[in-house]
Length: 346
Image (cartoon, rainbow, N blue to C red):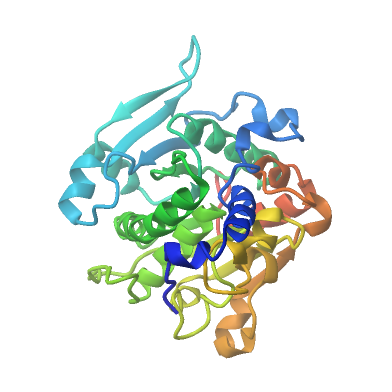
């Protein structure tokens, strides 16, 4: 079911409009700004202590590409940076050419991709990503060398909550294509784990759908002659319709492309609770609140989905840091995402 986004759905009366605008502030991230977290465990904010000989940390950004979806534009305008820890001095980000990154990606290794949510400005993507990396390193399997990729998309705040929602909701379609294009560049032997948060979960799901042969608003992906990697995916506070993953629906091919899908829900998350006010299509629940309805419609594919309810551990928050601070749940998530990884010497 393809969403219809129209301004007329939100202007029935001035009072209704004001209410929806207020609620949209929750949906699109005003309350979920990652810099305003209440819980700030030291492990999420300390400088990463990764050994550069073991882990790689990359930032790949489509901010200069916008919504363009073609092979040549991706090759020439995808912005690539690498996080370096020098033997002496402070760590920092260094720009690299896509061809050099592509050479690096040619070596299969456990790859973890983090896709941020809405209203994350340039620069915030780096700090947000490093906090996720720290969570992974604190809770994930020790001794497993990883390639950690921060996938950044044009999500900086646009004035006006309604406009911000409408524009960003539409951007998740080409953003899904761009991510799927990138995933097609990876060797088939690569184990890929994807951590998508809020709108980032929407992008991740869209990419899986495209890799499964589906389309997004007319966007399709050229089939790859060889196999693409296997995927383990975690959708955290997923900001899209709960029924999209069902067969024949908007992301109906997504589940077919994953080995494991961790579906994290929180019915107290205000962005999830008020999601249905934001889309102009009636009382449609967010996947990140309701979970997947009628999962039996997926048949045997339903066995690939593992629901994780974080309502009690996170509560009334749409702040990424609060999710990361829920240690038992995050340990479960990371260890599931890294289940295919081999430790050093393994």
